[in-house]
Length: 218
Image (cartoon, rainbow, N blue to C red; front, side, top):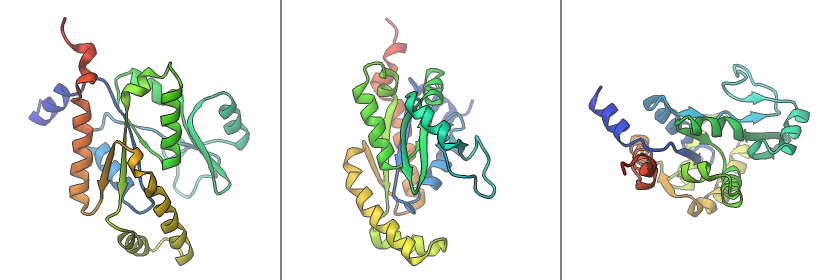
């Protein structure tokens, strides 16, 4: 076993549910992919959606594609940890796969917006039977170094019209007002430095005393 693997195993303790949010263009997807590549035991939470698959997307890998009727049936059944209607389509995170992974000792990575993170916090606070989620929950907000830097990144991507970029920037400003609700804030100014910070949060959370209470000797 390598020294890195030994260090990771020695600090594991109970699993964590790592919720990561960010404005569009802040680099959240790249940072999450780096973390998953380095720690392959992390389970990535695949969201459900009622929109049609885009070119190259696969059911179960990119999203779980559901009909609107099925999605709403599952909402009524209380199956979602969080959900929202965005631009006419529903998106949400199923409670079951997250709970199963955590019960199995696997870390879960959830890439969701601030609205979804707010809903999950509400679920955790309001339900006394959500002790596993409460213990596991860790949230991180990724933000750009400035709105001007975010605008430059969105323009460089070349994927959006000027009107869409303006809308995304307005949304980003609103989302950043929620930053103080998160346990950690990481400014993605330099990608390598931002990843080092996210990795440090992940490892430090595994070494928290309360995650090791159940495995301490008498």
